[in-house]
Length: 178
Image 1 (spheres, rainbow, N blue to C red):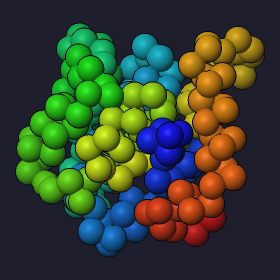
Image 2 (image 1 turned 45 degrees about the horizontal axis):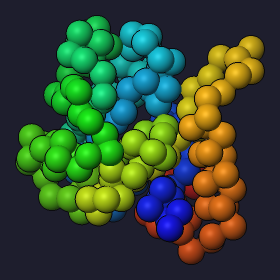
Image 3 (image 1 turned 135 degrees about the vertical axis):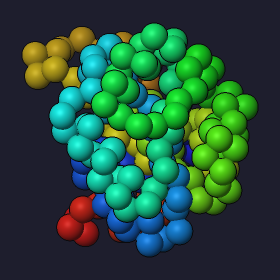
Image 4 (image 1 turned 180 degrees about the horizontal axis):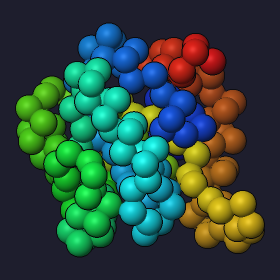
């Protein structure tokens, strides 16, 4: 039953994904979580993230932010990013994943969800049949304590690592083919 939490791909960070490859593979939209996926929890966007979105848009991919945060948090984050968003998304409820597809005017097989949590981002994408990529959640170097959910995620990812048939289901999406 753990397979509902298994990502299609698992990468180090959003910066390790080859978005041009995603486009050539037929994807037309990327749906992102924000906190601990793109930036540390509660932080505004960085120059690197702003540039990442610019590059993604240049490839022809549309972007969407799907967050359980409120409008105010997301609006603060996207000051320099031209991307629609859905706030208070109630992930892993599939309703807003499907709303995101409608807003982007793409089919489910043309979308990929990128997030840092298996219990929200990945579970919701899997429940609606959307390809997904789990990124290692952002932590500060001196951060020692992690929550109960993150410890359970470790167990799930350990199981995932033993299940080779569930890994690399999208294909070679790492920059440089790594």
